Length: 356
Image 1 (cartoon, rainbow, N blue to C red):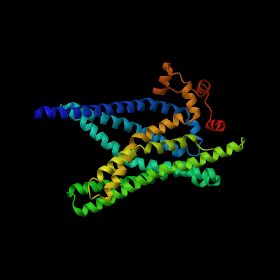
Image 2 (cartoon, rainbow, N blue to C red):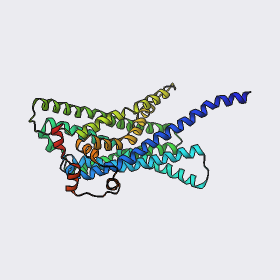
Image 3 (cartoon, one colour):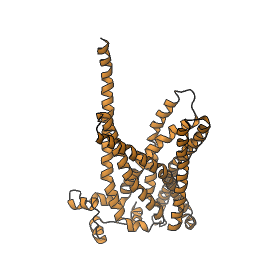
Image 4 (cartoon, rainbow, N blue to C red):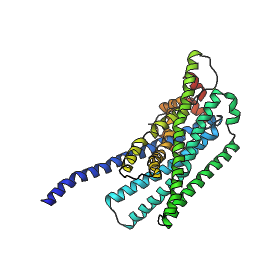
């Protein structure tokens, strides 16, 4: 009788576990498919617009963000593959040597992705904020452009310093874990570890808040530009980079996806009576970090393609039933500039803004 009761009670749990598993498999499939479809199209458009993008004053920053997006994209593919392998290994419980090797490769690749993003994401967030702040000042005070727009050499120097600081900070954070492990979590070391844990979380959360705040800069520019163009049809001054504005706005909305995760984590923490500051900050930090890893690269790609009217018009005119189109996208077959302009009616970004 008790066995029947246990069987009855465990049946809903089993169904729930299976539903939970297949739900995540479906989500991973959709996400993974999007990565493979959008990424080559993004590369194709950046290749087409490369010459025009180089003329922009913000090119050093946007090109660096483009490079990081490319690397992050491959990292996401590695991470997604690792997660799928771990899920399959856990679900099917394989014990052969191949499964063991694959599982260890998945763990190693996940660690590499984690370390890479620990170093890169804070710098990326800082650059996004700086770009927004720079555009804001240049738009409302054009004379500041010569002071705020760094040259290529100067920008490379800034990037080196930023990554050096990021590596230094994360190295100290890593040493904290090693010391805690070696000393078996002694109280003296916990004070050191807690301090760096708080510093790490506060810095990351602050930079993430900067990214969300940067959308206000672009919104101010966008609204001011709209107001002027309504009153004057012959307005010819510099106008905001719509793609970057929408990019920041979408990033702001996407980062809100981490709020339910934060709420759940904080809720679980307050079950315990003694809640440390570092634990509370980690409950905010990790959901934001995971959201950034999974969403930032794909947001850059989607906004670059769909938030630029010229790119969108090219996309709508492309014949995806033609094998040449797919060969051009996936194999990188270069078209001559005249051929591209004739087939897809490419226009400069400035022309598109004037029409908007």
